[in-house]
Image 1 (tube, rainbow, N blue to C red):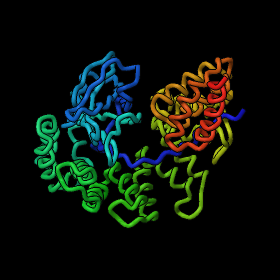
Image 2 (image 1 turned 45 degrees about the horizontal axis):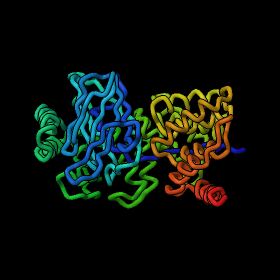
Image 3 (image 1 turned 180 degrees about the vertical axis):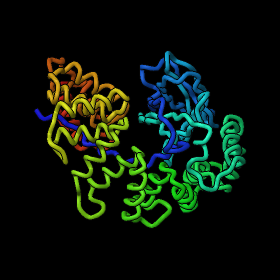
Length: 411
């Protein structure tokens, strides 16, 4: 029986503004986009158009978090260090605020939240010293910083006014504001969506050493987003941000090398980039590096070391890491074989909507893995979810299950 190990070398164009690469990291926060119709949640919300609202589950050791934005329908403290936030369908961003920290935007991609999908966003709150606010901007001044801080406060009351204030700060050369303005043009937040204009502002921030802008600029060049596609420029910006310690850039650089976008795949360089980002705590990189170790891809095969990194990724709530950890437990990679643990991690990942985990869970029910009672109806349910996402293995399996269940029904 062959287990399926998800080879998710993840690359994502995710805009996560931070104040400066010189800031000291103090707290991490995991944000999971959950399905509000899931039986785990007894509370459901509808937006003003009658659409089911999306529910964010936020886990963070920081107290008194608040979430601001025009699409925040409701928020509450659900438990110790756990927050629930209901967002309208199509929400593209939400600002996270906590006393003693600069506020932080979390962006959900070009098209916003798709209700029913389950995604994971790993972000980090940063502390800031009196000098750090301005440490990355060569043309900033106290007025620019004050305007930026004012835009953060306005976000909770008037998003349009907040964007206008943000633009004034950006015009004065303040890199964090320039980066946020670029994000506004990418999403079309109170400005006409304009990728070319976004590139202009992203470049201004990147040229001041703002590493998140450098990383995202690399992604824009790689994807031809507002600029002519150029793998050479993408590589340059990834390398610049990675050399300054940005873990997102390190991971994207690893993906770049593995895909051989600069001409020839270099799995050794890729694995090294994943390792460096993994050591900085980036969940997607921990999963990617763990996969490399299991396959001996660019590094010496080491199942025990792979298990260590995949466990770190999974425990952060990263769906790919959870699925990969399930494979380790099912197959005995680096750990004693434990089918119960495998099923637990497959289910956690599948509940986040990962197709490969849904397939693996369905396969377990179909085959009765590890003494699990066979349940073709349950197998069919999970296989269907994976097949609907285009996973070919699941599509083939669902056809066989249809035949099997059809035959049973006629008996």
